[in-house]
Length: 184
Image (tube, rainbow, N blue to C red; front, side, top):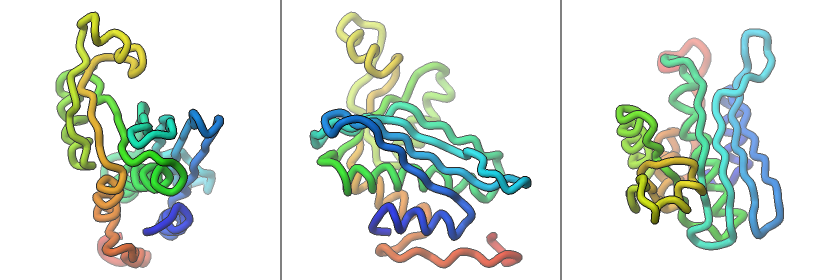
């Protein structure tokens, strides 16, 4: 996939509606990426979203909220996260000078924290530093909203990994499964 339009079309071919909302001036742009599916009543239902902001710097993509609300075992569960991430990285690479993203693997619960770190590592994020209770960490904790492991990743590498998760090889999408076929 080479563009946001291609990602939207790819998602639509699988019954997923991808939308990006960008707000604010170029110096500080808010970003919200959402993926919806169609429920039994044919109304769109939000399956996942990511929020963040971009400052026009190479390290300026700041990602701070990710929610995925897909029942386990649902076919869309395997696609929603990678589609959100692919759209986020593609947007950054297409529309901003941001080439690296930062996020915080929050430490609310130790088990959940370990899962987040593993998840973010699979996307190519690497640890920068631990934000704890120290006085010197207070400004960063106010920005990020808590303590945890601050991580950074390359947008191009994250996009490459997401494309692989979505079944994309060398920019060409794998055809959608036909209804009734195995693997659908």
